Amino acid sequence: MANPRATQWAQLFALPDQPALPLQARLRAAVVQAILEDHLSPGASMPSSRELAALLGLSRNTVTSAYLQLIDEGFLEARPRSGVFVAHNARPLSAAHAEPLVGRSGQASQPPDWSGRVLRSLEGKPTLAKPDRWRDYPFPFVYGNYDPQLFPTEDFRECCARSLARSQLPHWTPDFETDDVPDLIEQIRTRLLPKRGVFALKEEILVTLGAQHAYYLLADALFDEHTRVGLEEPGHPHARNSFSMRNPKWVEVAVDEEGLVVDALPAADYLFVTPSHQSPTTATLSLERRQWLLRKAELQDFVIIEDDYEAENLYEGTPMPALKSLDKTGRVIYVGSVSKSLSPALRLGFIVAPRALIKELRGIRHAMVRHPSAFLQHAYALFLSLGHHESHARRVNHAMQERLALAAKALREHLPEFEFTLPQGGASIWVRAPAWVDAGELSLMARSHGVLIEAGDVFFAKPPYPCPFFRLRLSSIAASQIPLGIRALGVAFEELALARGEVRAH
Image 1 (cartoon, rainbow, N blue to C red):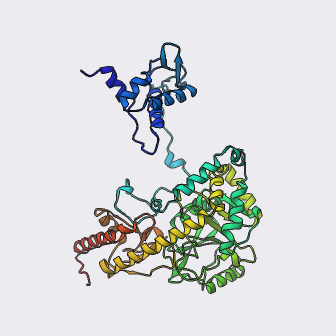
Image 2: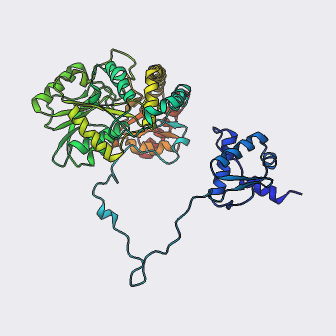
Image 3: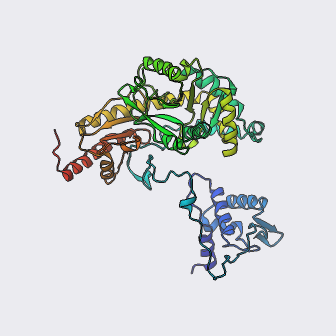
């Protein structure tokens, strides 16, 4: 007959499903959870290490080591000749329960009307969004996930471990106030920027929480409701949303197959551009247009905000110099990312600008987030200094070339009516469906087949309807899944054509 006490222990200390953690850490997590959730009261007796090891199928050494750590950390206490018990102060003190205040009528007062109080809202603004549980879709042609086949796990782990060495702690544990980790600034200045033809002083570089944080900082410092801000149409929705928090006057700038159209440029105070691989069309701005754009900035007295988007992902041709590298008058603010090719979740970017502006941005950043994680800055500085960034970029470029070729072949085979230009770099393909197709409707139809695509309307300030454009991102999907995913997209297109009464041209 089963021992009820043993069954209770086994349920209470069931190891959490976290296979990445060693058994000892998983047992510690189970005990701490039981204590903090009040399933074990202060002074409660714990099973012996021998008993718990037998119940959970663990070695006694594993249980003993977990117990010793929990005793050191104040969750448990050992009593001579009595055993191990939950410590009396194991759980933090909690505030006493209080009844809500009520008015004279005996009813609770009404909460504030937040819809009337919020002054800056992005609610309802179009953005690149993914459905719930999007990681469960077998064919995610969308942005925002790291690639487990490409992520340099061992290299990055090495850098994190080195940063945690006692000798390295003084380099990142102090409060940096408005500063950044000097090692990372130096790596950006001497390793990343020169490859783009950009040479900057350390006082001209600010680290951000990714490119989006850079957009927000710049808008906070430079824009108000009177500022004329030029954006590519179609363009980068995250930049548009970050800038919109200061409600500037929008100026739409046309884009063609060669990128931003510089001739007949409308009047603006600031112009945001993605010249390396235009977001979303992937077009690369020619050298002639870059030079003409800089000349226009002087003639029309505006400042350029250059997002050097996916500049490292180049598969053919010679790298085009960054606009910042051609700038001789200080009219280009340069935004870059050091972590996008690794994982967008790392959130490390930077701004290169005249030192007077960087000084202002440091003050704003300090008021907002103080500074990005110094630990992450230090670890990534090591990642750069040891050459891991370059070797990882080579692997990513090789993989993206393969994926682009697979996607192009599958599009021609399964969706021959669709138009696209194979990009020279980057990790996406901008696709134009037949004129009757609305990509938003196609994307919904595709979900039922396990396919996620980025409908093109989100990239336009004034999207057409129907909007036949969509983007296929290739950074979150394995090469082996690409042909299957585009074939499934072809099936979804067949269903949409049938529903709309359209006949496909074969």
